[in-house]
Image 1 (cartoon, rainbow, N blue to C red):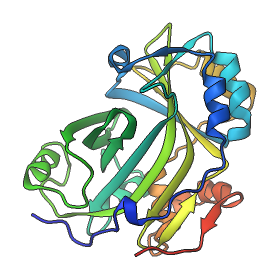
Image 2 (image 1 turned 90 degrees about the horizontal axis):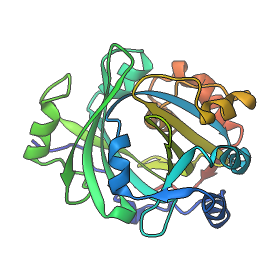
Image 3 (image 1 turned 60 degrees about the vertical axis):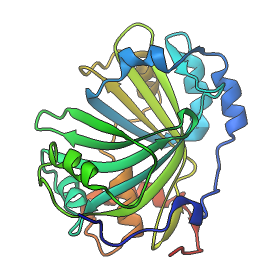
Image 4 (image 1 turned 90 degrees about the vertical axis):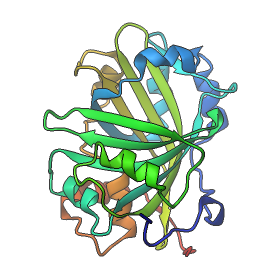
Length: 277
C-alpha cells in the first residue's frame, strides 16, 4: 500500500527561524545534574497521563532555576537541548485531526520522529484512550520517509482504530527539546523551544512560546514543576502541536474548537512568507 500525496522533504524546506537563544539556555541548564539515555529508561512512561502548558519562553530561565534541585536533565553528546524532527501522517479525510477536534476517544496520532543527536528514528503511534491516558507504541526505522512501507502499515494496523487504511504525510515539525527527570517520583517534563511547522502551504514559527508537557504514571499536582506553573498562573491547556499546526497551515480544515489556542498563538506568531511545494 502506498501513501498518496507526498510532501517536500525536510532538506527542501526553509526552517531556520529561532527566537530563543539556545546558547544562553544551555548555560542555564548546565546547573542541572545530567543523565544519559540509559538512566532515562525508568522514566520512559509509554503509558501515562499528560498535562500541557503554553507560555512565554522569557519566563523559562527563572522557572528552571527554581526546579533545578529536584530534576535532572537528559544530556546526549554533551547537549541538553535535543533537536527533533517529526513527520505526521493522516488519512485521506484527516480522520485523526477531526477525531481530536471533535473530542473523540480513543484517538490517534501517527508520526515518524527523528531524534537527531542520538541518530535514532521511529515510527510512533500515540493513542489517547477513554481514561485520558496516553499510550505510545513505536518501531525503529532507518530514517524518516514520506512513504510508508508494507511492514510499517502492518505495524500501524495492529494498534490503529481504523486498521489498514491509506495514509498520507501531511505536515513536518521541528523544535529543540529539553527533558527533565524528577529525582523523587516517576515524572518527566519535556519543554520544546523554537517550534516550527511546515507543509505544502507554507511555514510557521511559534516563537516566542515554550511548550511544556508533564508526563506521569498517575497525575500529581504536587511536584515542583507544577508549583512553578501555578505560581505564575500558567494554566494547563488542551493542546496538540499537530492539530494547531494543521489548522494554521490548512485553512480548509474545520478548526472552531481550536480557536482559543490559535488566537493566543497568532498574537505573537511569526510567519515565513515563502511557500514551499
